[in-house]
Image (tube, rainbow, N blue to C red):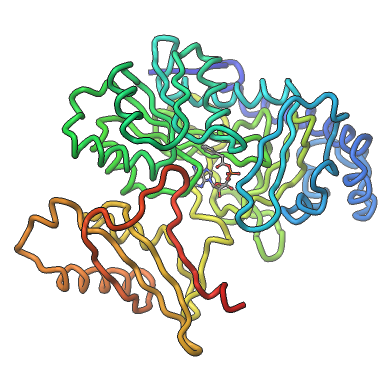
Length: 434
Ligand code: DLL
């Protein structure tokens, strides 16, 4: 199976791809310097002129920009074109501060949708497919991005948006959806609903394109089993465009970054130093074709590593391995770094589903951490092992993974709230006392 949407770009020889990146970078730097006061000031302050950027080897000379810069420039401070050239905004959820509002020209939207189209074709999508999109529509980029990509490929597109699981299942079965696009946590919920209703045989689904939040290999396995599909990862962020910044191919071994549009670097989050290939660090993107909301060396806060090893799918674009999470997702509990994904891996290895919640609190001067996880329906039937025994086993697993004692409560099926979009796994009550 060799599926490309734009084969000449997706399989472009490495040197040619780098030459294209250099050419685009040089133009883009001049473009932002000429058109965005913010960049002009930032580059002047750093003592860098557009002429200093002659190729991608000079990228490191440019200053970084951060989410705080975006917030400070809200709403129009980063526009590269007059507002009259912009045709759309999308926005982040803004749960951790002021919203980031990203602007798009029609050309920016075309590029973004092409990126999503590449992701859909990579999982075997074609005009014969029925693409069921239940990412949220609206300001969130998930629905509009995959919707646009699906149109470009020529799939019959079902713009379902999120929620109303009964209706999702009805359309999916009645209209024979073959490709499912949603968050992995919602895919897991749909899988659970399909198993409960015995609907698996009525599904025509073959592939799922799941992203917008971190998910583990164990979760991939569970989703593939419950829906009878291959589950592929897709990554992106509103600031850079939305879904489709990178996507998995049939190898399911890391996501190809669309290097004709985005240059990726991995840096040490503490020092800002660029790290060699293969090391884990913070992902930084430079957009080399975007006009309305051009970002240079944008620090994503996502932690991952890159691989330039050749991929047997034939794509030449660098791969990013599953993000470990955001640097700001990491919790420090009892002085130890804890990632929700580590906890999820322990639970899923012990046969639980991803229906869990982590509650962190402070009692006196001491941190407490509790994991609540639901029994699966099969576990609830199984009388050979008691709930305290299951709890003890999880406590041991978490102790060896994290090195700290975690309180564990195994609760009845269906007691933890299900998510329709990005799952909220952590409740950190310590923020309330700050
Ligand atoms: O989540 C865009 C998107 C929509 C991606 C649909 C994929 C599918 P934001 O709401 O701005 O945009 O959130 C971006 O979500 O910085 C990562 O921390 C996280 N994220 C996105 N995709 C993945 C993924 C959309 N595949 C933030 N794995 C990013 C892990 C992801 N984390």
